[in-house]
Figure 1 (tube, helix red, strand yellow):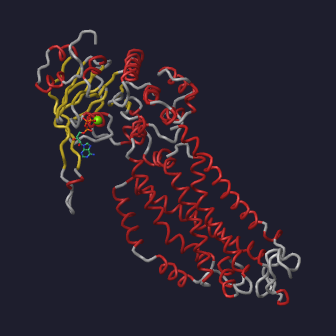
Figure 2: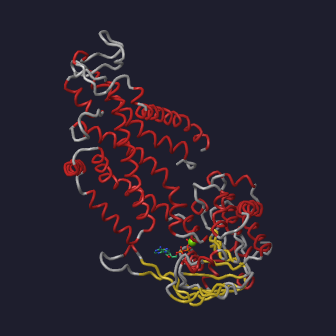
Figure 3: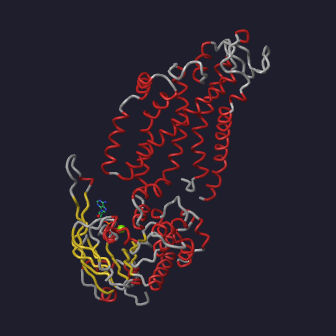
Length: 264
Length: 283
Ligand SMILES: Nc1ncnc2c1ncn2[C@@H]1O[C@H](COP(=O)(O)OP(=O)(O)OP(=O)(O)O)[C@@H](O)[C@H]1O
Ligand SMILES: [Mg+2]
Protein backbone atom coordinates (compact mmCIF):
# COMPACT_ATOMS: atom_id res chain seq x y z
CA UNK A 1 0.00 0.00 0.00
CA UNK A 2 1.24 3.44 -0.89
CA UNK A 3 -1.04 5.25 1.54
CA UNK A 4 -3.19 3.98 4.36
CA UNK A 5 -5.47 6.61 5.89
CA UNK A 6 -7.11 5.53 9.11
CA UNK A 7 -9.85 7.53 10.80
CA UNK A 8 -8.28 10.81 9.79
CA UNK A 9 -9.49 13.86 11.67
CA UNK A 10 -8.42 17.42 11.04
CA UNK A 11 -9.67 20.64 12.54
CA UNK A 12 -8.43 24.17 12.07
CA UNK A 13 -8.85 27.20 14.33
CA UNK A 14 -11.52 29.52 13.02
CA UNK A 15 -9.90 32.94 13.20
CA UNK A 16 -13.06 34.79 12.22
CA UNK A 17 -14.80 33.67 15.41
CA UNK A 18 -11.78 34.07 17.69
CA UNK A 19 -12.73 35.73 20.99
CA UNK A 20 -10.59 38.63 22.18
CA UNK A 21 -8.88 36.43 24.72
CA UNK A 22 -8.31 32.73 24.59
CA UNK A 23 -8.10 30.27 21.72
CA UNK A 24 -10.25 30.37 18.61
CA UNK A 25 -12.97 27.75 18.29
CA UNK A 26 -11.94 24.92 15.98
CA UNK A 27 -13.92 23.85 12.96
CA UNK A 28 -13.76 20.21 12.07
CA UNK A 29 -12.99 19.81 8.39
CA UNK A 30 -12.13 16.11 8.07
CA UNK A 31 -14.35 13.90 10.21
CA UNK A 32 -12.78 10.49 10.30
CA UNK A 33 -11.69 9.36 6.84
CA UNK A 34 -10.52 5.83 6.17
CA UNK A 35 -9.28 4.65 2.78
CA UNK A 36 -6.26 3.12 1.08
CA UNK A 37 -4.28 4.11 -1.96
CA UNK A 38 -2.83 0.92 -3.44
CA UNK A 39 0.54 1.09 -5.17
CA UNK A 40 0.20 1.95 -8.85
CA UNK A 41 -3.43 3.00 -8.50
CA UNK A 42 -4.98 6.21 -9.70
CA UNK A 43 -7.42 7.24 -7.01
CA UNK A 44 -9.89 10.00 -7.65
CA UNK A 45 -11.04 12.14 -4.76
CA UNK A 46 -14.27 13.85 -5.68
CA UNK A 47 -16.66 16.10 -3.85
CA UNK A 48 -18.33 19.47 -3.92
CA UNK A 49 -16.70 22.76 -3.09
CA UNK A 50 -15.76 22.95 0.57
CA UNK A 51 -16.03 19.21 1.11
CA UNK A 52 -12.43 19.07 2.33
CA UNK A 53 -10.63 17.63 -0.71
CA UNK A 54 -7.72 20.06 -0.64
CA UNK A 55 -7.45 19.77 3.11
CA UNK A 56 -7.25 15.99 2.79
CA UNK A 57 -4.58 16.34 0.10
CA UNK A 58 -2.54 18.73 2.19
CA UNK A 59 -2.79 16.43 5.17
CA UNK A 60 -1.58 13.49 3.07
CA UNK A 61 1.47 15.54 2.06
CA UNK A 62 1.85 16.70 5.62
CA UNK A 63 1.49 20.36 4.80
CA UNK A 64 -1.11 20.17 7.56
CA UNK A 65 -0.89 18.10 10.72
CA UNK A 66 -3.89 15.87 11.44
CA UNK A 67 -5.59 16.24 14.79
CA UNK A 68 -6.48 12.56 14.95
CA UNK A 69 -6.14 9.25 13.18
CA UNK A 70 -3.20 7.96 11.24
CA UNK A 71 -1.49 8.44 7.89
CA UNK A 72 0.83 5.63 6.80
CA UNK A 73 3.00 6.25 3.77
CA UNK A 74 4.62 3.13 2.35
CA UNK A 75 4.66 1.42 5.71
CA UNK A 76 5.86 4.45 7.65
CA UNK A 77 3.58 6.41 9.93
CA UNK A 78 3.92 10.11 9.10
CA UNK A 79 0.94 11.46 11.02
CA UNK A 80 2.89 13.60 13.47
CA UNK A 81 6.45 13.49 12.08
CA UNK A 82 8.36 16.75 12.49
CA UNK A 83 9.41 18.72 9.44
CA UNK A 84 13.02 17.60 9.93
CA UNK A 85 12.04 13.95 10.10
CA UNK A 86 9.82 14.35 7.04
CA UNK A 87 12.45 16.03 4.88
CA UNK A 88 14.19 12.87 3.60
CA UNK A 89 10.76 11.41 2.75
CA UNK A 90 9.51 14.47 0.95
CA UNK A 91 11.14 13.58 -2.36
CA UNK A 92 8.87 10.55 -2.54
CA UNK A 93 5.49 12.30 -2.37
CA UNK A 94 4.97 15.32 -4.58
CA UNK A 95 2.13 17.63 -5.44
CA UNK A 96 0.80 19.46 -8.47
CA UNK A 97 -1.18 22.54 -7.53
CA UNK A 98 -4.43 23.89 -8.86
CA UNK A 99 -3.28 27.36 -9.83
CA UNK A 100 0.14 27.40 -11.51
CA UNK A 101 0.11 31.21 -11.41
CA UNK A 102 0.38 30.90 -7.65
CA UNK A 103 2.42 27.70 -7.38
CA UNK A 104 5.24 28.82 -9.69
CA UNK A 105 7.42 31.53 -8.20
CA UNK A 106 6.83 34.47 -10.57
CA UNK A 107 10.38 35.74 -10.22
CA UNK A 108 12.19 32.52 -10.99
CA UNK A 109 12.81 31.05 -14.39
CA UNK A 110 11.23 27.75 -15.35
CA UNK A 111 14.64 26.06 -15.27
CA UNK A 112 15.27 27.25 -11.73
CA UNK A 113 11.79 26.24 -10.62
CA UNK A 114 12.38 22.66 -11.75
CA UNK A 115 16.02 22.55 -10.63
CA UNK A 116 15.39 23.87 -7.11
CA UNK A 117 13.91 20.69 -5.60
CA UNK A 118 16.48 18.56 -7.47
CA UNK A 119 19.39 20.47 -5.92
CA UNK A 120 17.73 20.31 -2.53
CA UNK A 121 17.67 16.53 -2.68
CA UNK A 122 21.24 16.30 -3.92
CA UNK A 123 20.58 14.98 -7.42
CA UNK A 124 23.52 14.71 -9.84
CA UNK A 125 23.37 16.25 -13.31
CA UNK A 126 20.62 18.70 -12.49
CA UNK A 127 20.48 20.53 -15.82
CA UNK A 128 20.23 17.27 -17.77
CA UNK A 129 17.37 16.24 -15.52
CA UNK A 130 15.64 19.57 -16.06
CA UNK A 131 15.87 19.07 -19.82
CA UNK A 132 14.58 15.54 -19.46
CA UNK A 133 11.62 16.68 -17.37
CA UNK A 134 10.76 19.35 -19.94
CA UNK A 135 10.92 16.72 -22.69
CA UNK A 136 8.62 14.44 -20.77
CA UNK A 137 5.91 17.08 -20.37
CA UNK A 138 6.32 18.12 -23.99
CA UNK A 139 7.80 21.58 -23.51
CA UNK A 140 10.73 22.82 -25.60
CA UNK A 141 13.99 22.92 -23.66
CA UNK A 142 14.57 26.64 -24.22
CA UNK A 143 11.50 27.29 -22.06
CA UNK A 144 13.78 26.84 -19.07
CA UNK A 145 14.91 30.46 -19.68
CA UNK A 146 11.37 31.79 -19.45
CA UNK A 147 9.45 33.23 -16.55
CA UNK A 148 6.06 31.71 -15.65
CA UNK A 149 4.15 34.76 -16.88
CA UNK A 150 5.63 34.23 -20.32
CA UNK A 151 3.83 30.89 -20.68
CA UNK A 152 0.24 29.94 -21.47
CA UNK A 153 -1.97 28.39 -18.80
CA UNK A 154 -1.53 24.87 -20.13
CA UNK A 155 2.24 25.31 -20.43
CA UNK A 156 2.41 26.58 -16.86
CA UNK A 157 0.59 23.54 -15.61
CA UNK A 158 3.08 21.38 -17.53
CA UNK A 159 5.88 23.10 -15.67
CA UNK A 160 4.12 22.19 -12.43
CA UNK A 161 3.99 18.57 -13.59
CA UNK A 162 7.64 18.66 -14.68
CA UNK A 163 8.71 19.95 -11.27
CA UNK A 164 6.90 17.08 -9.56
CA UNK A 165 8.06 14.23 -11.80
CA UNK A 166 11.67 15.45 -12.03
CA UNK A 167 12.16 14.18 -8.47
CA UNK A 168 11.07 10.67 -9.54
CA UNK A 169 8.53 10.44 -6.72
CA UNK A 170 6.50 7.35 -5.88
CA UNK A 171 3.31 9.28 -5.31
CA UNK A 172 1.83 12.45 -6.76
CA UNK A 173 -1.16 14.37 -5.55
CA UNK A 174 -2.87 16.45 -8.22
CA UNK A 175 -5.28 19.01 -6.77
CA UNK A 176 -7.77 20.24 -9.37
CA UNK A 177 -4.95 20.70 -11.84
CA UNK A 178 -7.16 21.29 -14.86
CA UNK A 179 -9.97 23.36 -13.45
CA UNK A 180 -8.30 26.60 -14.52
CA UNK A 181 -7.78 25.49 -18.13
CA UNK A 182 -9.98 25.56 -21.21
CA UNK A 183 -11.42 22.28 -22.43
CA UNK A 184 -8.80 21.48 -25.07
CA UNK A 185 -5.80 22.14 -22.79
CA UNK A 186 -7.62 20.17 -20.09
CA UNK A 187 -7.70 17.13 -22.35
CA UNK A 188 -4.03 17.56 -23.28
CA UNK A 189 -2.86 17.91 -19.70
CA UNK A 190 -4.96 14.94 -18.60
CA UNK A 191 -3.65 12.73 -21.40
CA UNK A 192 -0.12 13.76 -20.51
CA UNK A 193 -0.65 12.96 -16.87
CA UNK A 194 -2.18 9.58 -17.73
CA UNK A 195 0.80 8.69 -19.92
CA UNK A 196 3.33 9.78 -17.32
CA UNK A 197 1.62 7.79 -14.61
CA UNK A 198 1.83 4.68 -16.77
CA UNK A 199 5.40 5.28 -17.97
CA UNK A 200 6.86 6.08 -14.58
CA UNK A 201 4.73 3.64 -12.61
CA UNK A 202 3.42 6.44 -10.40
CA UNK A 203 0.71 6.23 -7.84
CA UNK A 204 -1.64 9.17 -8.26
CA UNK A 205 -4.31 10.79 -6.17
CA UNK A 206 -6.40 13.03 -8.34
CA UNK A 207 -8.63 15.61 -6.72
CA UNK A 208 -11.46 16.98 -8.77
CA UNK A 209 -15.06 18.02 -8.55
CA UNK A 210 -15.57 16.93 -12.14
CA UNK A 211 -16.71 13.32 -12.39
CA UNK A 212 -16.21 13.04 -16.13
CA UNK A 213 -12.51 13.81 -15.63
CA UNK A 214 -12.29 11.31 -12.80
CA UNK A 215 -13.90 8.65 -14.96
CA UNK A 216 -11.29 9.06 -17.68
CA UNK A 217 -8.29 8.85 -15.43
CA UNK A 218 -8.99 6.97 -12.25
CA UNK A 219 -9.23 3.32 -11.30
CA UNK A 220 -10.82 3.99 -7.95
CA UNK A 221 -12.94 6.82 -6.57
CA UNK A 222 -13.44 8.24 -3.10
CA UNK A 223 -16.46 10.51 -2.76
CA UNK A 224 -16.21 13.16 -0.09
CA UNK A 225 -19.08 15.19 1.29
CA UNK A 226 -18.71 17.69 4.14
CA UNK A 227 -15.62 16.01 5.49
CA UNK A 228 -16.99 12.48 5.40
CA UNK A 229 -16.44 9.70 2.86
CA UNK A 230 -19.91 8.84 1.58
CA UNK A 231 -18.78 6.21 -0.89
CA UNK A 232 -15.65 4.56 -2.23
CA UNK A 233 -15.58 2.07 -5.06
CA UNK A 234 -13.88 1.08 -8.29
CA UNK A 235 -14.62 3.56 -11.03
CA UNK A 236 -16.76 1.21 -13.10
CA UNK A 237 -18.82 0.14 -10.11
CA UNK A 238 -19.34 3.68 -8.94
CA UNK A 239 -20.48 4.96 -12.31
CA UNK A 240 -22.72 1.98 -13.02
CA UNK A 241 -24.35 1.64 -9.64
CA UNK A 242 -23.77 4.62 -7.38
CA UNK A 243 -24.94 3.75 -3.88
CA UNK A 244 -24.85 6.96 -1.91
CA UNK A 245 -27.48 9.59 -2.58
CA UNK A 246 -24.82 12.28 -2.83
CA UNK A 247 -22.94 10.33 -5.52
CA UNK A 248 -26.14 9.95 -7.52
CA UNK A 249 -26.70 13.71 -7.34
CA UNK A 250 -23.13 14.33 -8.47
CA UNK A 251 -23.54 11.98 -11.42
CA UNK A 252 -26.74 13.73 -12.44
CA UNK A 253 -24.94 17.04 -12.34
CA UNK A 254 -22.40 16.05 -15.01
CA UNK A 255 -22.91 18.64 -17.76
CA UNK A 256 -23.34 16.13 -20.58
CA UNK A 257 -26.45 14.99 -22.41
CA UNK A 258 -25.90 11.46 -21.16
CA UNK A 259 -23.45 10.99 -18.33
CA UNK A 260 -23.23 7.24 -18.96
CA UNK A 261 -22.08 7.42 -22.55
CA UNK A 262 -19.71 4.57 -23.08
CA UNK A 263 -17.32 6.44 -25.37
CA UNK A 264 -16.21 8.77 -22.61
CA UNK B 1 -1.63 43.17 -23.21
CA UNK B 2 1.84 42.58 -24.54
CA UNK B 3 1.58 45.65 -26.76
CA UNK B 4 0.60 47.86 -23.88
CA UNK B 5 3.61 46.57 -22.01
CA UNK B 6 5.84 47.41 -24.94
CA UNK B 7 4.53 50.96 -24.93
CA UNK B 8 5.17 51.43 -21.26
CA UNK B 9 8.87 50.67 -21.47
CA UNK B 10 9.92 53.92 -23.14
CA UNK B 11 9.05 56.57 -20.53
CA UNK B 12 10.33 54.12 -17.95
CA UNK B 13 13.75 54.08 -19.56
CA UNK B 14 13.85 57.86 -19.60
CA UNK B 15 13.03 58.01 -15.90
CA UNK B 16 15.87 55.67 -15.05
CA UNK B 17 18.32 57.50 -17.30
CA UNK B 18 17.55 60.97 -15.94
CA UNK B 19 17.52 60.04 -12.26
CA UNK B 20 20.48 57.69 -12.60
CA UNK B 21 22.37 60.30 -14.62
CA UNK B 22 21.97 63.05 -12.06
CA UNK B 23 22.87 60.77 -9.17
CA UNK B 24 25.94 59.42 -10.96
CA UNK B 25 27.06 62.98 -11.61
CA UNK B 26 26.49 63.82 -7.98
CA UNK B 27 28.36 60.79 -6.67
CA UNK B 28 31.29 61.50 -8.98
CA UNK B 29 31.30 65.15 -7.89
CA UNK B 30 31.22 64.15 -4.23
CA UNK B 31 33.99 61.56 -4.51
CA UNK B 32 36.31 63.77 -6.55
CA UNK B 33 35.42 67.03 -4.78
CA UNK B 34 38.98 67.62 -3.49
CA UNK B 35 40.32 67.44 -7.05
CA UNK B 36 37.59 69.08 -9.09
CA UNK B 37 36.35 71.78 -6.72
CA UNK B 38 37.71 75.03 -8.17
CA UNK B 39 38.31 76.62 -4.76
CA UNK B 40 38.76 75.76 -1.11
CA UNK B 41 35.14 75.59 0.17
CA UNK B 42 36.10 77.18 3.49
CA UNK B 43 38.37 79.94 2.26
CA UNK B 44 36.91 83.35 3.02
CA UNK B 45 37.81 86.50 1.16
CA UNK B 46 35.72 89.51 2.03
CA UNK B 47 36.91 91.36 -1.07
CA UNK B 48 35.28 88.66 -3.23
CA UNK B 49 31.96 88.62 -1.38
CA UNK B 50 28.71 88.11 -3.29
CA UNK B 51 30.21 87.59 -6.71
CA UNK B 52 27.45 86.64 -9.16
CA UNK B 53 27.50 83.45 -11.31
CA UNK B 54 29.67 83.37 -14.42
CA UNK B 55 27.17 84.66 -16.95
CA UNK B 56 26.55 87.95 -15.17
CA UNK B 57 28.87 90.93 -15.21
CA UNK B 58 31.29 91.64 -12.38
CA UNK B 59 32.51 88.10 -11.80
CA UNK B 60 35.98 86.78 -11.10
CA UNK B 61 37.37 83.80 -13.07
CA UNK B 62 37.05 80.43 -11.28
CA UNK B 63 33.94 81.34 -9.27
CA UNK B 64 31.48 79.64 -11.62
CA UNK B 65 28.38 79.86 -9.47
CA UNK B 66 29.39 82.99 -7.56
CA UNK B 67 30.32 83.45 -3.93
CA UNK B 68 28.44 83.99 -0.68
CA UNK B 69 28.66 87.04 1.57
CA UNK B 70 31.92 85.80 3.07
CA UNK B 71 33.47 85.27 -0.35
CA UNK B 72 33.34 81.48 -0.31
CA UNK B 73 32.88 79.69 -3.65
CA UNK B 74 29.31 78.39 -3.99
CA UNK B 75 30.14 75.55 -6.44
CA UNK B 76 32.95 74.21 -4.27
CA UNK B 77 30.75 74.32 -1.19
CA UNK B 78 27.99 72.49 -3.04
CA UNK B 79 30.40 69.76 -4.11
CA UNK B 80 31.59 69.25 -0.55
CA UNK B 81 28.01 69.50 0.70
CA UNK B 82 27.07 66.67 -1.69
CA UNK B 83 29.52 64.42 0.17
CA UNK B 84 27.64 64.77 3.41
CA UNK B 85 24.22 64.51 1.77
CA UNK B 86 25.19 61.31 -0.03
CA UNK B 87 26.90 59.68 2.94
CA UNK B 88 23.79 60.28 5.01
CA UNK B 89 21.54 59.06 2.18
CA UNK B 90 23.50 55.86 1.58
CA UNK B 91 24.31 54.91 5.17
CA UNK B 92 21.00 55.91 6.76
CA UNK B 93 18.97 54.55 3.84
CA UNK B 94 20.75 51.22 3.82
CA UNK B 95 20.66 50.72 7.58
CA UNK B 96 16.97 51.66 7.77
CA UNK B 97 16.24 49.31 4.93
CA UNK B 98 18.14 46.34 6.35
CA UNK B 99 16.67 46.62 9.84
CA UNK B 100 13.12 47.41 8.78
CA UNK B 101 12.96 44.95 5.88
CA UNK B 102 14.44 42.08 7.92
CA UNK B 103 11.96 42.58 10.74
CA UNK B 104 9.07 43.01 8.31
CA UNK B 105 10.05 39.87 6.42
CA UNK B 106 10.28 37.79 9.58
CA UNK B 107 6.99 39.10 10.96
CA UNK B 108 5.12 38.65 7.69
CA UNK B 109 6.47 35.22 6.83
CA UNK B 110 6.75 33.48 10.20
CA UNK B 111 3.63 35.09 11.71
CA UNK B 112 2.85 33.76 15.20
CA UNK B 113 4.72 35.21 18.14
CA UNK B 114 7.54 36.90 16.15
CA UNK B 115 4.85 38.80 14.28
CA UNK B 116 3.01 39.74 17.48
CA UNK B 117 6.16 41.10 19.09
CA UNK B 118 7.38 43.01 16.04
CA UNK B 119 3.98 44.42 15.12
CA UNK B 120 3.31 45.57 18.68
CA UNK B 121 6.72 47.24 18.71
CA UNK B 122 6.02 49.02 15.42
CA UNK B 123 2.66 50.27 16.71
CA UNK B 124 4.18 51.69 19.86
CA UNK B 125 7.04 53.21 17.90
CA UNK B 126 4.77 54.96 15.47
CA UNK B 127 2.81 56.59 18.27
CA UNK B 128 5.70 59.03 18.78
CA UNK B 129 5.58 62.18 16.63
CA UNK B 130 8.61 61.76 14.34
CA UNK B 131 9.92 65.34 14.24
CA UNK B 132 9.84 65.68 17.99
CA UNK B 133 11.45 62.28 18.23
CA UNK B 134 14.29 63.35 15.91
CA UNK B 135 15.00 66.61 17.69
CA UNK B 136 14.93 64.84 21.04
CA UNK B 137 17.34 62.20 19.81
CA UNK B 138 19.78 64.73 18.42
CA UNK B 139 19.56 66.76 21.59
CA UNK B 140 20.54 63.65 23.53
CA UNK B 141 23.19 62.39 21.13
CA UNK B 142 24.60 65.81 20.31
CA UNK B 143 24.86 67.12 16.74
CA UNK B 144 27.04 65.15 14.35
CA UNK B 145 26.98 62.93 11.31
CA UNK B 146 26.16 59.77 13.24
CA UNK B 147 23.40 61.45 15.21
CA UNK B 148 21.60 62.32 11.98
CA UNK B 149 22.01 58.80 10.67
CA UNK B 150 20.84 57.19 13.90
CA UNK B 151 17.88 59.55 14.12
CA UNK B 152 16.77 58.64 10.59
CA UNK B 153 17.18 54.90 11.18
CA UNK B 154 15.42 54.95 14.53
CA UNK B 155 12.46 56.87 13.16
CA UNK B 156 11.99 55.36 9.73
CA UNK B 157 12.60 51.63 10.09
CA UNK B 158 8.90 51.20 10.87
CA UNK B 159 7.97 52.29 7.37
CA UNK B 160 9.94 49.37 5.92
CA UNK B 161 8.76 46.94 8.57
CA UNK B 162 5.09 47.68 7.93
CA UNK B 163 5.17 47.59 4.15
CA UNK B 164 7.44 44.56 3.86
CA UNK B 165 5.43 42.65 6.46
CA UNK B 166 2.28 43.12 4.42
CA UNK B 167 4.08 42.07 1.24
CA UNK B 168 5.62 39.01 2.88
CA UNK B 169 2.22 37.99 4.21
CA UNK B 170 0.70 38.14 0.74
CA UNK B 171 3.58 36.18 -0.74
CA UNK B 172 3.58 33.67 2.11
CA UNK B 173 0.03 32.65 1.25
CA UNK B 174 1.01 31.77 -2.33
CA UNK B 175 1.23 28.14 -3.37
CA UNK B 176 4.86 28.41 -4.40
CA UNK B 177 5.69 28.62 -0.71
CA UNK B 178 3.73 25.43 -0.04
CA UNK B 179 5.48 23.96 -3.03
CA UNK B 180 8.87 24.76 -1.49
CA UNK B 181 7.76 22.91 1.62
CA UNK B 182 6.67 19.94 -0.50
CA UNK B 183 10.16 19.99 -2.01
CA UNK B 184 11.62 19.88 1.50
CA UNK B 185 13.08 23.37 1.71
CA UNK B 186 13.61 24.70 5.23
CA UNK B 187 11.53 27.66 6.37
CA UNK B 188 14.44 30.07 6.61
CA UNK B 189 15.70 28.99 3.19
CA UNK B 190 12.22 29.50 1.76
CA UNK B 191 12.13 32.99 3.18
CA UNK B 192 15.42 33.88 1.51
CA UNK B 193 15.07 32.10 -1.82
CA UNK B 194 11.34 32.30 -2.47
CA UNK B 195 9.88 35.25 -0.55
CA UNK B 196 12.77 37.71 -0.64
CA UNK B 197 13.10 37.83 -4.46
CA UNK B 198 9.41 38.64 -4.59
CA UNK B 199 9.54 41.50 -2.11
CA UNK B 200 12.85 42.81 -3.43
CA UNK B 201 11.28 45.20 -5.98
CA UNK B 202 9.29 46.82 -3.17
CA UNK B 203 12.39 46.95 -0.99
CA UNK B 204 14.35 48.73 -3.73
CA UNK B 205 11.61 51.30 -4.26
CA UNK B 206 11.37 51.96 -0.53
CA UNK B 207 15.17 52.11 -0.20
CA UNK B 208 15.63 54.82 -2.81
CA UNK B 209 12.66 56.70 -1.41
CA UNK B 210 14.28 56.52 2.00
CA UNK B 211 17.54 57.87 0.59
CA UNK B 212 15.65 60.88 -0.73
CA UNK B 213 14.02 61.35 2.65
CA UNK B 214 17.44 61.12 4.31
CA UNK B 215 18.75 63.91 2.08
CA UNK B 216 15.81 66.13 3.05
CA UNK B 217 16.15 65.33 6.75
CA UNK B 218 19.85 66.11 6.66
CA UNK B 219 19.14 69.40 4.89
CA UNK B 220 16.44 70.34 7.41
CA UNK B 221 18.64 69.52 10.36
CA UNK B 222 21.50 71.56 8.84
CA UNK B 223 19.03 74.33 8.15
CA UNK B 224 18.12 74.53 11.82
CA UNK B 225 21.77 74.08 12.72
CA UNK B 226 21.40 70.69 14.34
CA UNK B 227 23.60 68.96 11.82
CA UNK B 228 27.36 68.51 12.00
CA UNK B 229 29.82 71.28 12.90
CA UNK B 230 29.07 74.55 11.18
CA UNK B 231 32.29 74.88 9.19
CA UNK B 232 31.86 71.87 6.91
CA UNK B 233 29.55 72.95 4.12
CA UNK B 234 26.08 71.43 3.88
CA UNK B 235 23.27 72.14 1.46
CA UNK B 236 20.90 72.89 4.30
CA UNK B 237 23.39 75.28 5.87
CA UNK B 238 23.92 77.03 2.55
CA UNK B 239 20.18 77.39 2.07
CA UNK B 240 19.88 78.87 5.56
CA UNK B 241 22.66 81.38 4.87
CA UNK B 242 21.38 82.16 1.38
CA UNK B 243 17.93 82.90 2.70
CA UNK B 244 19.17 85.90 4.71
CA UNK B 245 20.73 87.57 1.67
CA UNK B 246 18.41 86.42 -1.07
CA UNK B 247 17.79 89.98 -2.33
CA UNK B 248 21.48 90.78 -2.74
CA UNK B 249 22.74 87.35 -3.83
CA UNK B 250 19.97 84.97 -4.95
CA UNK B 251 22.52 82.40 -6.20
CA UNK B 252 23.64 81.43 -2.73
CA UNK B 253 20.11 80.20 -2.03
CA UNK B 254 18.96 79.01 -5.43
CA UNK B 255 21.79 76.68 -6.51
CA UNK B 256 21.79 74.48 -3.39
CA UNK B 257 17.99 74.43 -3.53
CA UNK B 258 18.06 73.18 -7.11
CA UNK B 259 20.64 70.51 -6.21
CA UNK B 260 18.54 69.40 -3.26
CA UNK B 261 15.39 69.29 -5.33
CA UNK B 262 16.97 67.32 -8.17
CA UNK B 263 18.59 64.86 -5.78
CA UNK B 264 15.42 64.11 -3.84
CA UNK B 265 13.42 63.84 -7.06
CA UNK B 266 16.03 61.53 -8.60
CA UNK B 267 16.10 59.23 -5.60
CA UNK B 268 12.34 58.96 -5.62
CA UNK B 269 12.31 58.13 -9.34
CA UNK B 270 15.31 55.82 -9.27
CA UNK B 271 13.55 53.00 -7.43
CA UNK B 272 10.55 52.95 -9.75
CA UNK B 273 12.88 53.15 -12.72
CA UNK B 274 15.01 50.24 -11.50
CA UNK B 275 11.92 48.18 -10.77
CA UNK B 276 10.42 48.78 -14.18
CA UNK B 277 13.71 47.98 -15.83
CA UNK B 278 14.84 44.90 -13.90
CA UNK B 279 11.77 43.30 -12.33
CA UNK B 280 10.83 40.37 -14.58
CA UNK B 281 7.19 40.65 -13.53
CA UNK B 282 5.53 43.88 -14.62
CA UNK B 283 2.60 44.62 -12.44
N1 LIG C 1 -7.25 27.84 6.96
C1 LIG C 1 -8.56 27.54 7.16
N2 LIG C 1 -9.19 28.02 8.25
C2 LIG C 1 -10.49 27.73 8.45
N3 LIG C 1 -11.23 27.01 7.62
C3 LIG C 1 -10.67 26.51 6.52
C4 LIG C 1 -9.31 26.75 6.23
N4 LIG C 1 -9.01 26.13 5.07
C5 LIG C 1 -10.14 25.54 4.67
N5 LIG C 1 -11.15 25.76 5.53
C6 LIG C 1 -12.52 25.25 5.40
O1 LIG C 1 -12.46 23.85 5.25
C7 LIG C 1 -13.43 23.38 4.33
C8 LIG C 1 -12.76 22.50 3.29
O2 LIG C 1 -11.87 23.28 2.52
P1 LIG C 1 -11.09 22.67 1.28
O3 LIG C 1 -10.22 23.71 0.72
O4 LIG C 1 -10.43 21.40 1.71
O5 LIG C 1 -12.28 22.34 0.28
P2 LIG C 1 -12.20 21.71 -1.17
O6 LIG C 1 -12.96 20.45 -1.12
O7 LIG C 1 -10.82 21.66 -1.66
O8 LIG C 1 -13.04 22.76 -2.00
P3 LIG C 1 -12.78 23.32 -3.48
O9 LIG C 1 -13.36 22.31 -4.40
O10 LIG C 1 -13.59 24.57 -3.49
O11 LIG C 1 -11.32 23.51 -3.63
C9 LIG C 1 -14.10 24.61 3.78
O12 LIG C 1 -15.36 24.72 4.35
C10 LIG C 1 -13.20 25.76 4.17
O13 LIG C 1 -13.97 26.89 4.45
MG1 LIG D 1 -9.60 22.70 -3.16
